[in-house]
Length: 341
Image 1 (tube, rainbow, N blue to C red):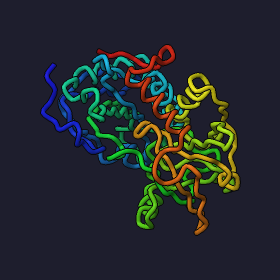
Image 2 (spheres, rainbow, N blue to C red; image 1 turned 30 degrees about the horizontal axis):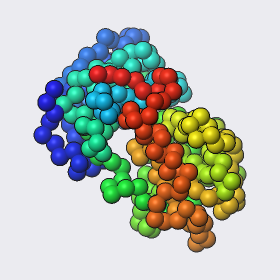
Image 3 (cartoon, rainbow, N blue to C red; image 1 turned 180 degrees about the vertical axis):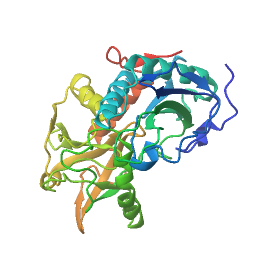
C-alpha cells in the first residue's frame, strides 16, 4: 500500500486525523458488533456520564514497521487486560479482550497508509477509550457506553534524542490511598494537569509524586513509572498499590533479567535513598525511557552520576534492547511482538 504524503521524519507527538476508527456502543446490557467508521467526531448527551462524573478509562499502545517490513504491536494483550481492570474499577461494562485485540488489528490494517516506515523514527500511536455516553444526573454509573479505538502517526517523543531531564518533587498528590492510581482512568490525568503546568512554569520537565499516605516513598510521574539503577547495577522500580502498572516498565524489568543478566526487583523506594542511585529514568509507551539527570526536592538537588548529557550506560542498554525487540532487530520473548501485517 502506498503511504500517505507525510514528512515522517519531522512529525511531532500530536494528533493527526486518520481514515478509520473502530466504534462499538453498549446499550440495553450488551455491546453491539461495532464497525470501522469514517467519522472522527463523538456526539453524546450534554448529561453524559463522561461529562458529569469523568466515567472514562483509556489505553495507549503503538504499531511499528519492523526492519523486515512487517507491521506489529507490542504486547497488546496486556493493554486489553489492563483496560478491563480499569473498566471494572469505574463500573464500566468490560469490552471483551478478544474483541479489543481484533479491533486493534482492524484499525491498524485500515490505516496502513498512516503507519510510518521503518527507520523514520515515527510510529502509529493507538488510543483505545471507554466512556459513559448515557445521561446521568444522580451520582451513579451510566447505562450506555462507547468503546472506540483511533490511531495517529506520531514522531519521537524527544526530538534530537533523549536528553536527560530535570524534574521536581511535587507538593500535590496524584492519587489517593486506596483510590484509582492503579488504573488508567482519565480522572487521574486530570488530577495531574495543574501540577504539570506549574512544574513547566517553574522550568521542570515533570513531577515526582510521593505516596499519598506518608509522602516519603517514590511513586510515579503524571504519565510514567520510575526505573532506577543502583551503583552496583541493580535495576529497581517502585512498588505501590497506587501507581499504574506500566507495560513498558514490566517489560524493561524482564529485559534486565533475561537479556542483560542484571538483578532486578520491584520494591518500595524512599525519597531519601534516591540520592544513592546511579541512574534514573521514566518509562512509558511514548518514549520507552526518558532519562532523568536531576531531581529537585524543594531547592535540594539530587544529581545522578549519569549526568545531564546522555542516558546512563545501563539505561541505554535497556532502551536499546527493548526498542530492538519492538522493531524486530532482536528476537523477543514469545508473544511480545504481535504481527498485524
